[in-house]
Length: 135
Image 1 (tube, rainbow, N blue to C red):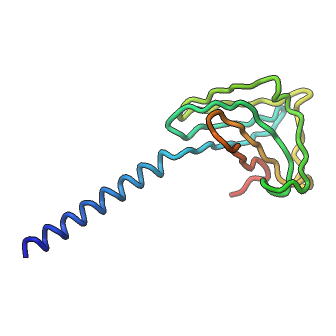
Image 2 (cartoon, rainbow, N blue to C red; image 1 turned 120 degrees about the vertical axis):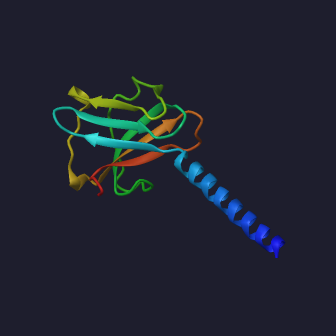
Image 3 (tube, rainbow, N blue to C red; image 1 turned 180 degrees about the horizontal axis):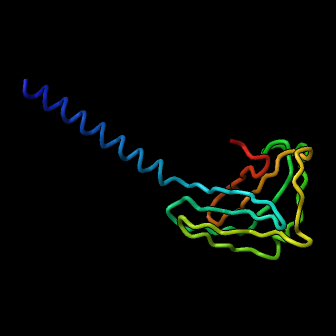
């Protein structure tokens, strides 16, 4: 009788600890959030939701039908070759401003606007949708 209760108790405790560990791991996973604000100057806010700092070594802004398709792919000249190695600390936001000759207009007929971030210590780039906004 007591061994059954101890077995049930230890099973519940170990399950609870596993759930807590999974939740902690899920909340601390690698995440980058991007937001486009348009006005006189176009600005892209890049927020690092990861617990460690990340370094953006390059980025690519492009129009496409979807982020993995080359169909309708059209890159936007943003002058990204001039600025590299942007360090975004943990839970911090950096703003990329596009003005003058690097400004671009938003048009739904062009497709979706994406940003592809090439990060140090990551094999694949991170691609996020910027426009049109999804609710």
